[in-house]
Length: 325
Image 1: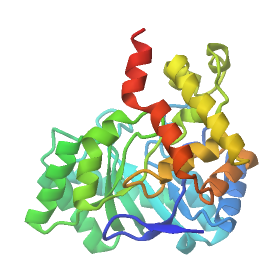
Image 2: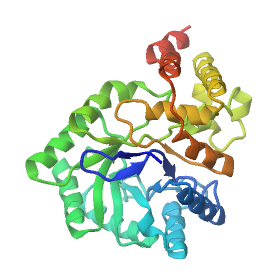
Image 3: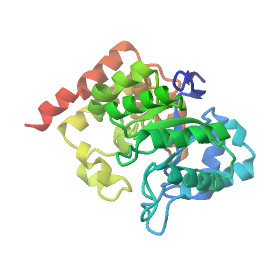
């Protein structure tokens, strides 16, 4: 399978990243084990999770996804075959959030314990913490890199200005720097990445691993009416896309996927891979068909005409024009 560099200093990775947010949520442990085995066998060896996954589920407290992955590492013995990314910063419980040095140092120990490993390949700031000086955050990350507990660091949910400031802070202080960015980016969420973050990505040669690459399932074509969203686990997340513009994007995905004897999910991911700066879109799967889509998306090369059609129908100015009617 083709690989891309994760930032100018980072490791090579497969072009699709398996999202671990469903582990301990919509995918039980035993099924997660089977999926991880199948993904690795198919060449998908990049797995992304976070300490907070899946705290939002009633009865969960966070750490469930990391725990499942850790148990799989212990059972399979395949830790050294996986590029593992996790995150810190979202609220785990009252007072347990942010990017202060002491919290980062405690959180990485907690994640290492749950993951049953002694190192994390990419440790990511889950979101910016405006209340903590960048020097404090990056110094803490730098110390963990020097200790060998993490190999690289990445950022998620930063503005372009703060991301650039963080990168310059690392440069001026000799700290480890963010090698990757994890933004919200897909065919129906283009504006923020393309206008604000892409210039920073290009200047500093960051790898980009966008989350919600399939817009919480909307770009698979499974939601074509408000009724389709009402009983789905992620239905509330996709209701904002079920409008004239969003359905026009799905219709174009149908046309392009038919022309390529493919599926809307594979085409949506292949479109992402064709965009500037994108290294490895993150997508999760809850069944074998969805996992197959992830594997095959990495092998699908869209022609220029198909990419242009998708660019045009999903353009932010087109969206604005349709939604103000």
